[in-house]
Amino acid sequence: MASLQSFSIILLTIYVILIVSSSLFSKKSDSIEGYFLANRSLSFLALAITFIASWWGAGSAIETADHSYQNGISAFWIYGMPVLFSTGLLFVFARAIRKVGSITQPQLLEERYGKAPALMLSILIFLFMTITAASQIVGIGIFFEKFLHLDYTMSALIGTGIVLLYSFFGGFKAVVRTDIIQFIFLLSASILVFAYAYYYSGGISAIKTIADTKQLTYYFSFTHQLSSNMVYIITFGSAWMIQANVWQRISAARSPQDARKMIGLSFLVYIPLYLMVTFTGMLALGLFEEMPQGGIISGIINDYMPPFLGALIFVGICSAIMSTMDSLINTGAMVLCVDIYKNRFRPEATQKQLLIVGKIGTIIVTLIALLIGLEIKSILKVSWLAADLLSTGAFVPLILGFIWKRGTTIGAMSSMLFGTIFSLYNLTVALGAKLPLPWEIGTAKHVLIGMLGSSLVYLIASLLSKAETIKSESFIHKANLKHNS
Image (cartoon, rainbow, N blue to C red; front, top):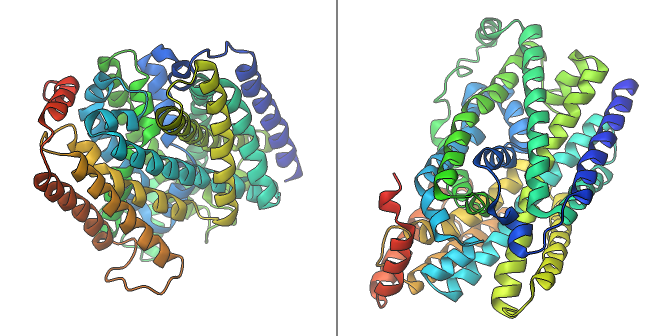
């Protein structure tokens, strides 16, 4: 065990030195578009890899395996299916998003509706990115704590400090560069962990026998707990489809065609990646009588792999968590810099001033996320709180804005206010407030009421308010969604 920890610390140190040096000594951005979009100079393949890496993070690498061990193949619904659902929707919208040409989502929403909905979306995105970044801080904190036997607080501080260092100096280009390195690390790690789990468990046939012996009749049923799992698709899928760091990558593509190719490639790659993690957890049924302390991945590394190889896997998992965290922090900082500071307070700000604000924003997002991550130590809980806020608060006006020209500024604001109040009310109850609630939080009924209510408010308020025909037709024509297929 001591040698595994020693190897892990040495390799992690080398890894950190390499990625931080890469950021420090690379060419610095001289504009805000360079800092947050890499001047739209990146290939669709590089963007696809960073897109995959930004979603395939702590939840995918750790939580999916643990849920699969407990619930079988139906655990694929928790992260895998929402990712495929949202990526499929993005494939339809990718060209239109890139054609609009905005740096950020609020800029796009302002062009479609006006300043008030854009500011509201800026606040929602900032909250979503910060809270979701906190979920990755929880992931890195738990992983360091269980694997290296460090204090959780110290673990979270170390992991967050690493990400802040290279994100602060390198901006989006550094995020993409490190994401590519991190994706290679994680892919190699995941394949190795799967291979060891497969070999020592005896394979799928052995797991079927064990599941039958333990009367786990649901273990190979993809539709097990289908109604409960649909909640993840609706909430996570809707929120992730409009996730600002994903639209940032679409906006960073060289052309609308590259944007769509990036999404299409990512969709195809996600299928085997999430299945591999799911089966790794299921194969662990043949390795452990009960959930090992620290989770399935840590258990396999500690109990079945040689120390040096286990250390490489450790670095691979850490890289996955950090690749998701850096994307969220970078996008949260972009919203603070471009959508709130520049567009609302200092439209005359120079590129140099905006770069400074962008870097300060990176620090602010990181520190707030760190405070949340130190307080709430559950990846799934934090992810849910963030996704519920964005899916009910922004999905409807953002997506229907590309399709329905009768949608108005008042309709968008009404829908966003309804979704925000709905989510915050549920959050207040979840935190212990004694308030009336006719549905159970985190159920299909809860999600459907939120999404349906947001849609109805948007439609009714738009129809009751004055049409904005010229503005809406101009935006829809520019996006040209009908000719994107």
